Length: 222
Figure 1 (cartoon, rainbow, N blue to C red):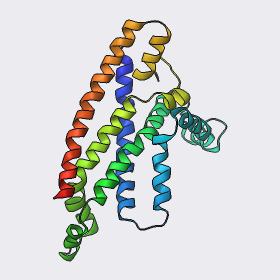
Figure 2 (cartoon, one colour):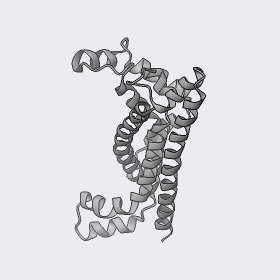
Figure 3 (tube, one colour):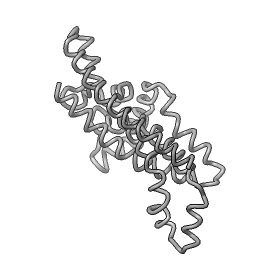
Figure 4 (cartoon, helix red, strand yellow):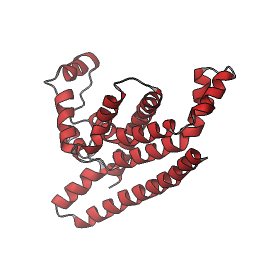
C-alpha cells in the first residue's frame, strides 16, 4: 500500500513541477500576446481536459513508442525509454494536468489591470522587473490554485498512465492503478483503504485550491 502511494506522490510532484513551469509561462504569453495563433494554442493546450484518457495514452504511445522517430531518438541518443517506465507515467500525468494549471494561470494574468504594469514601465522598471514585482505577486493566487488542481489531477491519473506505463508493481503501479488491480483481484479491503487515502489527499488539496481561488477573485474586483 505504501509503494503505490509513494509512486503516485512522486509522479504527481514531477508532473506538477513541469506543468506548473510550462503552464504558467504559456499562460503569461497568451495573456499578453496578440498573436492570431493564440486561440489555436489555447485550444490545443486545453484538449487533454476533454479528450478521453485512453485516447491521450494512445497518442503518447504513438509519439514515444519504439516505432516512432522521437521514441527511437530518445532510445538511441539518450538511452531513455518512456514505455512501461516511471518516466512514461510522469509524462502522462503532465499532459493530463497541464490544462488545469495553464487555464487558471492565463486567467490570473489577464485579470491584472494593465495600468499597474504600465506604471512600472513609466517608472523605468524592466520587463523582468515588472513580471517579478507586479505581475506574479498579483497573479500568484490563481497560479497556485491551478497548481493544486493540477497536482490532484496528476495524483489520480489512471487511463493515460495505464496505456503508456502499464501496471508494474513497485515501478509504475500508482495508487489509482493499484485500486483498479485490487478490485479486479477481489481484494475489497485493500481497495477501500487505498481509495480512502487518495480521497483524503484530494479533498485536502481541493480545499486549499478553493481557499486560494476567492483571493484571486478579490484581486480582480479590487
